[in-house]
Amino acid sequence: MNLKNTRMRYGLVAILLHWLMVFLLSGLFLAGLYMTSLDYYDPLYHSLPYWHKSTGLLVMFLLLIRLAWRRVNIKPDALKTYKNHEIVLASFIQDTFYIVILFIGLTGYLISTSEGKGIKITNGLEVPAIVRSIDEDTVDLIGEMHLMMAILLSSLVVFHALAALKHHFIDQDNTLKRMLGI
Image 1 (cartoon, helix red, strand yellow):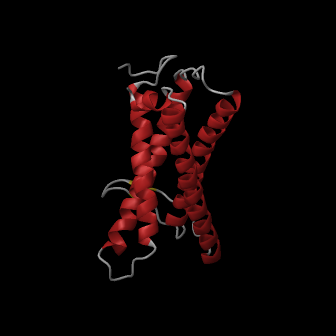
Image 2 (cartoon, helix red, strand yellow):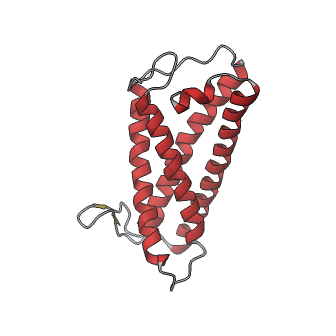
């Protein structure tokens, strides 16, 4: 399999970035929902937010790599079975994915650094805060936006997965196989 995309199929780099982000974003969503139910005495109360933040920063880094890779790499041609509205909708959904993921990352960053402290990734590595402090009401609003965007992203993922399954089982084309590297 090629590392780069061809006119017929996605390359290994695009496929790995796609599925790695699916895995990480799914974990972030589930962990984020679970974290809201924890009380102070739960063993995960302090450790899970650390992993959520670190993984969120990793996703932001991967998003930048994915956007750069997309820019320097060709996009496989649409299959001949695609209808024009499917091509337009798929492109819109893909662009929306990137915007929503970026927005979720930025709001998560603002929540995490709202007290003027950076985000510790490891003992020696920290992403600095760019604001000194954000008032509690604003942090609550940013938190609501973070959650709403995560729900929107999850809804888009479900729609995207259903579309891939529709192409595979109803249209019986190679859409899903191309992203699985088959």
